[in-house]
Length: 92
Ligand SMILES: [Zn+2]
Image (cartoon, rainbow, N blue to C red):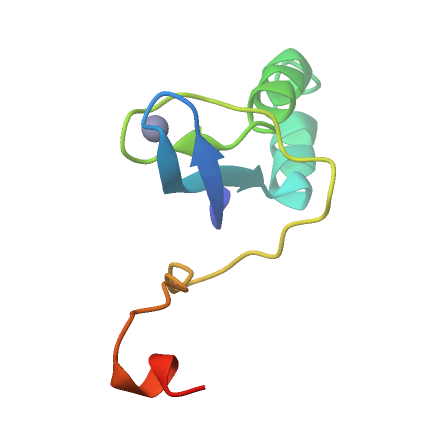
């Protein structure tokens, strides 16, 4: 019933950037299920919707708020942009 979205966000518990996941509900499926159960599923749907808004760290399981700025869902971790001192960088 869910689709997973992955973000790379800073985790305070881990102290580093980690993969975070949000299990996005498929509301069309939820609506169908609510109709089939004659509305009995509506509270469950509401609880799942409110829970699923906060991304969870895959390493430690801590939930955090989504940042205010829009973060694009990424499939690969961001590359570390570390400038390695060496003959090419020092030549300038
Ligand atoms: Zn973490």
